[in-house]
Image (cartoon, rainbow, N blue to C red; front, side, top):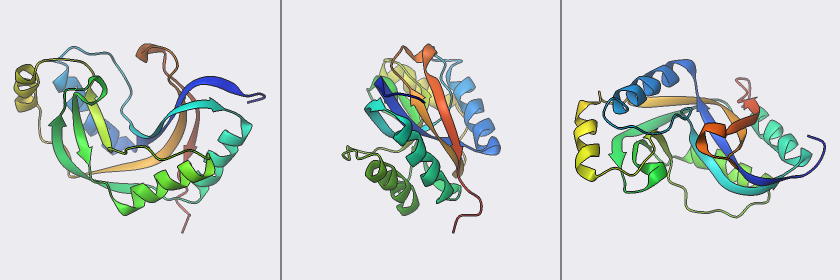
Length: 175
């Protein structure tokens, strides 16, 4: 990246292949009953970053070298009356996950906002009854998910135009 970019950006954590396949299957099942926009499975670590630059990418690369893939405990499928948290896998807010998130906040010089770790299965505003019916048809979620990379994502546009700018594998050799 050559110059500063303004917009709306996020840092996402991405699932390893096995975890991703399991979550995508749950998303497919959910969308048999609920019709929402398509989005790639992810866990938002930091959202609403207003501008990025070369330093942002350098910081994320350095962070990725200092963290190994993380095993995340799940707490089942939950729902809220929020568009981006309509139906999701709740993730235990554990020490390692918070350590990764806090390092990103520190290195990008961002203030901490509420952190509600989850992996969405459906985005939308549907009635609780309909979401409950769909939830009953979805198989149980895995007990654990593994994240193995982070990415910088441009979320300035509508969901279908969200774009990963750069992805950084978590270092399997980090200690």
